[in-house]
Each structure stands twice: as structure tokens, then as C-alpha cells.
Amino acid sequence: MKKYLITSALPYVNGLPHLGHLIGCLLPADVYARFLRAKGEDVLFICGTDEHGTPSEVGAAKENMPVEEYCLKYHQLHVQMYEGFNLSFDYFGRTSSEQNKEIVYRIFEKLWQNGLVVEKTTRQVYSPDDGRYLPDSYVIGTCPYCGYEKAKGDQCENCTKVLDPIDLIHPKSAISGSDKVEIRETKHLFLQLPKLEQDLAEWIETKKGVWPDIAYSIAKKWLKEGLQERGITRDLKWGFAVPKEGYEDKVFYVWFDAPIGYIGITKQWADEKPTQRRFEDWWLNPDETIYTEFMGKDNIPFHTISFPATLKGTGENWTQVSMLKGLNYLNFAGGKFSKSEHRGIFLDDAIREFPADYWRYWLIANAPESDDTNFSFDQFAATVNKDLNDVLGNFINRVLKMTATNFGQQIPLLGNPTTTEKELYAALDSLIETYTKHLSQLEYRKAMSVLREIWVAGNNYLAQTEPWKVVKTDTDYAGTILNTALNLIRLYAHLSAPIMPQTAQKMIDIFEYPDNLAWPDAPMSVYLTKLPTGTPFQLIQPLFQKILPDRTAELKMRYKEE
Image (cartoon, rainbow, N blue to C red; front, top):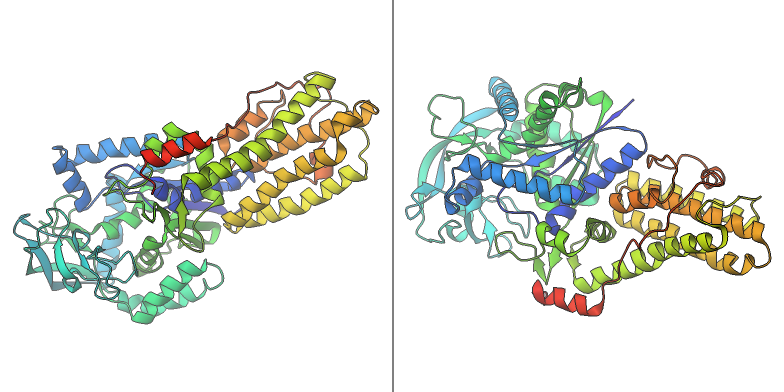
């Protein structure tokens, strides 16, 4: 049986994550992992904090902490945030682990032995005011290609063009803001990507029509422009020391060791968890492993070019990405969510404002798949009020109360289905097949549109059969209608579980019936008859609360949504 390996782009450890990070990679990966587990697949969902590099050094200095303590502090805060949003990682590790160090050194030595690493003298930005060389991402200036004024020295976020810091117009230090920068010579090690270009191009061509357009097109753009040798070392103290003579004062570049962190974190899981599985079962067993990566569009070049090339260059049979789900940006108030500028809604604030499932539903329903998406509290409130409260929540409340009033708090007898029930079965069979297909293909917006249609079908069924009228003249058929509707609640729990796990569990807990939220695997003519007659159920408080205009106005003011 095939195994499913799922990784989300590793969130950088400094500071706290915001909604943009959540929908950019973490939440879509979680929904997919939950969906596959519900189908009974063998799944390993891996993530962790990306901890090396200048941001950690700078952040630790600002908080007057040793960098190791700083990274541990924020790693633990990330863990708390993701637990609050019910992200179901099988393991959430750290790129600074000894396991990752071991794998990084192993891969580096293979690349070195294969003649794919060379030493070059480079010109690098030095800041006298900071007293240090500035890593690429800590030199900011104007992009020479598109004119974006906040481009970083390694890549322009606006046009995704790969940059060299010395190419920036009006460069300055992102640490101190000083524009008194010098260009000095220093030695570094480079991965010879041009030697791997043909093999990489042939492999990427096999992904045409498999990867989303955004991932495939970005990879092809890089190849068309021609691959350049890529520096894999930096003049820093925090990171994995380079195991070569003459490089004692340098460490590996974070973009070299961070993607390898997927493998290192898997080894952490294998070493620390009570399991008989080895990391090699997933990472050196490509014929039996389907590997799916999730990330924002700014990370796509590194995962379609640099990381695959690194693994290919070793000559070992590493598992390569099968499907790469790249997403665009979630914007806020007309601009990007920004950790550095604290613009947007961060996860600690979000979870205090509303239950996690409110956010999870809105984000997946509005996933920035084909283009950037803008968040607004008006849209958020409208979706929660209409889809969750009026369609799903209202259906559940009506059915429970109507049944309790007329039959008591137990499942009424199911009679022979009429044409109306048979039409419902057929419609749901078709919709669920489509919904399953969209989730399998990582088409989240399409999937959520169908899920809402499935919920609407329940309301339409009640409107068509009118059990509140039928019960006055035909108690048996009224029981059949409400039996069917109660089974729909159970069905909705199963179908909603990957998106809204807490809500789904509350829906299942309504019934005194053993259930494991497995994916529906039977035709609706069978599935909607599963709850035995007489099964007790409980009345519950409404699952959702409407967000009123006054609350929306208050939120817009608090979070400075213009």
C-alpha cells in the first residue's frame, strides 16, 4: 500500500505566525492529512520550526537572550498556536536538531564527493555599523527588475526574481537601517546547480499537468533563465558549522539546511516516538511513497529547484515531491500580512476572537489558489453567518428540536424510502464523489463550494418534505424524514471533519453511537440508514453564533482594517 508523506513549509521561528502563514501552507496540509487519514491511508504529516539564520540572531539580541533559548521559546509558542488551531501534525520538530545536523552533513558529504560543491571568492555586503557581513535576506533595497522598494537581497517577493544583494539599488541593512554598507570579498561554498540542470529539467517536465500552474510555471521560469551556482554557506555563528578546513567561522545557509529539515524532523519523529518506523521508510523508499508539499508562492523556487537538485546531486534514491501545492498570498487591509510590521491578524489574537473552526472554514473556502485573496471582517462575518450559522447550524438545530418534540430524543423508525429520499441519495452520491475528487486533487475552493451544496441539500430536503406538516397526518413518514435528516447530521460531521474537526466531533457526540469519523465509503442509500432506531441523541447549544454588525465594526477598528 502506498504511503502518504505530507510536509508544510517550515514556519520561521522568530515571532508568531499570522493567518497568512496558516492558509499559505499549514492549514491546507492539515486538511489533506485529515482527509487521507479518514480514508484509511497510511499518512505521515511533518512540520517544524525553521530556526537558523540571521533573524534568530537578531531576534535573540533584541530580547537579550541566548539564541538557543530564544529559538526554544518561540518553538514552544508556535506549538501552542498550532494546537489551538487543531493542526494534526504527526510530529512538529526543529531544524536545529541533532538529527537534522546528521542528515545535512550526510547530504553535504555526498555532494562534495560527487564534485558538486566548489569554493568561490564572492563579493558580499558588509555593514560597519552592524559590525558584520549581512546575509542576503538582511540587505534590502529596490529591485533592479521590477522597482519594488522593499526587495530582499536573496529574492524579490514582488516579482520572485532571484537576486544578489549587490544588485539591489540603494541597499541598506535590514538590521540597523544603515545605508553605510561596503562590498568585501569572502570565500564561500557553492552548489553547482548548472551540472544538475538537465536532469532537473527532465524531472520537472514530468510534473506538467500534475503540479498546479503556479508551481510548474515558476519552476520553468527558473530553468528558462538558466540555473546559477547557489551559495550554501554564510558568515554567521548560529547554524550548523561547515565541516571543512578554512570554514570554521561559517555555517550552512538556512536555505540549504531548512528543506533538508523535512528529513531531519522525520528522523526526530522516528527517534523520539514509540514507533517501529524508520525515516528511511519514507525518505529512501520513493516507489512506495507519495510525497506532497504545501507552501506559499515565495517558497516555490527553493522546493522545485534547489531542494530537488540537492537530493539528486547525492546520487541516493531520495523521495522527491510528487505533488506541490503552491498558494498565493492572503492580504489584509490592502497589503500583505507582515510579521515585521505587525500588520494583520496573528494566531494568538485570532483564537481569542473566535473558535478555530470559524477561521479554518473561512480560510479554506477562500484559499488563495489562483490569485492573492484579501481578508476582510465583513467577508468573514458574512461567510460565518450564512454558511455556518444559517445553512449548517440551522439545519442541525431544526432537526434535533423537531425530532425531540415529536418522537423524543431518540432516532425514529426508518420506513421505506420514497422517490424523494431516493432522489436525495442519488444527488448526494454525485456531490460526495465530486467533493472527494476535489479534496484528492487539492482544489480547496471547489471542494468547499460542493460541501456547502451538500449542506444546502439537507435544508432543501426539509423544505420539500415539510415534516412539521407531515407529522400531523402521517407519523410514520415523518419519522422516516427525520431519521434521514438525523443521518444527514452524521454524514455532515464526517464530510466536515477535515475542515472543522472540533465542530465535527460535537456533531458526532450528539448521538450515542460509536463513530470514528471515517470517510463515507457506502452509497447514501446505505449510509443514511446507519443510525439504529432508538439510538438516543442529545439537544445541544447552537454550534455557531452570528457575528453582528457592531462586533464587525469593533474588529475592524481594533485591527486597523481600512
